[in-house]
Length: 285
Image (cartoon, rainbow, N blue to C red; front, side, top):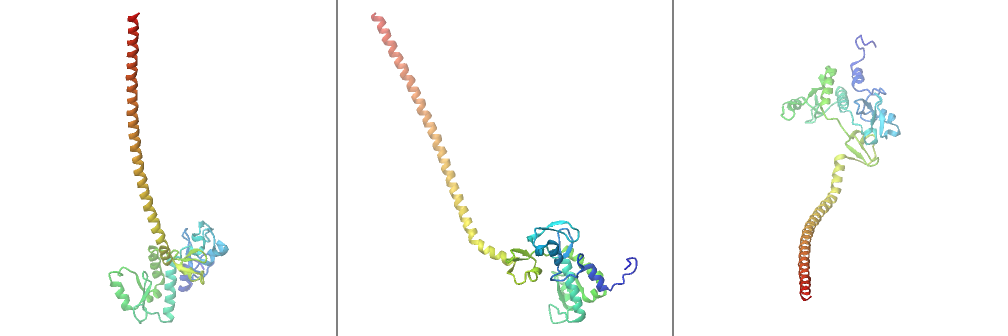
């Protein structure tokens, strides 16, 4: 279509093209095969494209970005460890919720009433009453709560707001460990790409590691303490040895000087005796 003319595409199509479409394969993002992952260069591509560009089923140390062709390192040596694009996932989730809102019942998280709004920070749905309460409570009054009807009425405006909100939020990173593949992965890939594998959340894995390391660290601390004590003993022995060495030097020097003085005194006595004998001989002669 001609960009100078009004866009004839339906709003839903425009939203998908602008926010929810992979630039490489043009597939609509989802939470599985086409999950959006963000590369260090800032570009976003679906997981399927990343696997294809990396080769070897996504296992690689580095790869070229499918969008800008920039060479980048692959975290965890697997493309699924590239962090998901949190902003796109948030928009995708709300987009699906709006679709569900138009067709079926979306429950409020706080009661059995129909959800009419969503908090972009908490990512939870609320009825009108709970949405109002959420907006006045001190802990959540600064959160962004949008109504599904507003999204339907002004989708571009609301999604722009969500996009800006996502920029300020922390992006998702690797949140699980697949012990089968020996690789880090995000929570989305943990239930898709690594389905059936032995996968644990990083928090649980770290807790297990800490439990296993506790007795080791205790032994290390004990050994470190013993080494410090032995070092202190060695330092004390070294000081004592230095003191003894200085005393030996002093005593040896005193003894040596005594011997020298004694030798000189004896030498003088001998010279005196010799001179005495010589003088007596001279007198007799």
